[in-house]
Length: 222
Image 1 (tube, rainbow, N blue to C red):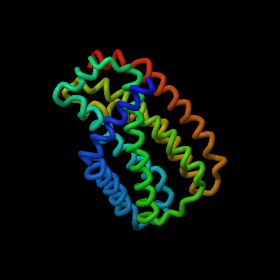
Image 2: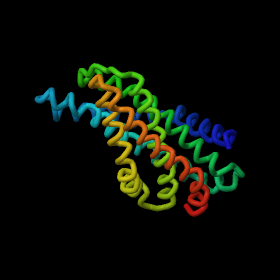
Image 3: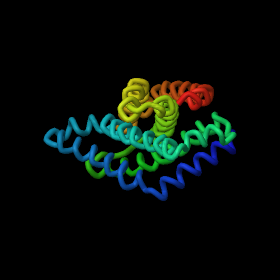
């Protein structure tokens, strides 16, 4: 399974490096979201400071939707999904590979957005340990749930609009947990954020297990 996962992850990442869709479209979209939030709340600096964690993760989540749709748009072209079914690769490995590829893209995006938040919102970043662990777990949750629901919506004509409708309610606990953990880290009280990290870890594990077990049947039906 690990070998198949690395093959799929390598394929998707090489395609992104060549196409530069994430660099030329997803990243500018995420930065634009942050800029618009800054314009909307700029008159009230205190409100902008308090809302920074939530605005950051909303920008990440919206950008993740674009990355996930791109991940399955690749497989929809030229009958690639049929080739993937006939490849003999372990479906669980395909799932893990796509999760890894999306996670790598999101981690890079989150790092660049963190710089954008520090510059645009003049936010002083503290609690690095909590921030890093929160980002890793939240990214794994978003990538796993997105990949699972992405393959579910992949075979439908309305997949571009159906994926957000399916995914956003499922990821609400992750959005809340990551926002609260970031708030605790930025406020200098990381001990208050670790329980939220534990809660997100449970959701991440559930999404990953569900994907490993259910991706194969969903891929066959898509």
